[in-house]
Amino acid sequence: MLTDPCLEPGTLWRRILEQTRHALGCGALQPIETEQRIVEDGGVGFLVRVVSNLARKDRYRKEQGDKALKDGKGRLNPFLPPDRELTVGGISRTHLGVLNKFNVIDHHLLIITRHFEDQETLLTLQDFEALWACMAGFEGLGFYNSGVVAGASQPHRHLQMVPLPLSTTGPLTPIEPLLAAAETTRTVDTAAALPFRHVLSRLEPSLVADPLAAAGETLVRYRAMLASVGIRPVEDHGQLRQPAPYNLLITRRWMLLVPRTKEFFATISVNALGFSGSLFVRDEKQLDAVIRHGPQRILRELSG
Image 1 (tube, rainbow, N blue to C red):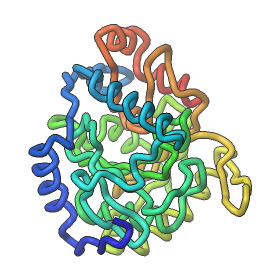
Image 2 (cartoon, helix red, strand yellow):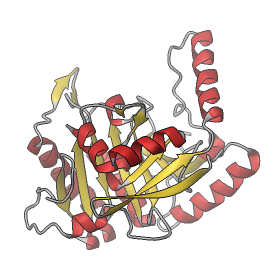
Image 3 (tube, rainbow, N blue to C red):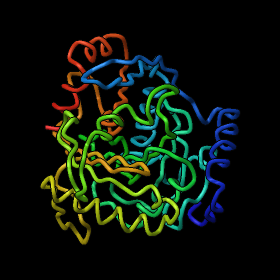
């Protein structure tokens, strides 16, 4: 798999659709059904997905963990190699595109490094090149969970991308109205209406026409955003690691970086998608907690 050629430009979305049909047919892809609710809070219609059944995913993770212990390998890495039935193809010479096995959102793509890279090291130019190659393929929301506290479930470096809009009704992302209201000309700034700690950087939509240039531009902005919230890389055995967890979200129009202080609000785990206005809960009890406390309070407490 490490020598797989890269997909031809303009073919990514078609390949995602083809691989999705194949993976569903052979059982490799196991979507998790949800019920969608809109929870209004502070002028935002937060999209809350109530997951119908996580038993299959939980059982799979346990089986993989048991297998790793039995084989004496410690934690099993599902990305080395990735499941061929889920693999869309080469995104770049350094990254592969793989379907999320237990997807809640249709056509959820994982952008993984071909060789092991630590999820808690700084993103590189190659990571942004792969992400923008995908951004050029279809309009989506790219995101990165930097570390366990930020919602990362695997230590192998992977960005993720889901198609936009996140819902069949409303804006591309639920928080879009709050971003649109932010008047700023600075490269790194904040949106006063957002209820959680963050930094925002607006992007020219035309950047997507040149993914390599877009990668270089967003790498510079990413590093400036980290510095602006006090996350300064620490060198460790020749690698730059971040000393604190964060979430990064990217569309063709903006970048949003959110420092994290904890993963859970009560029992509710939140990853980067939560800060776009899209939350996931395991049952009606967790949904009731979201409604009672309000999504804005939840996101504010998780970002410190």
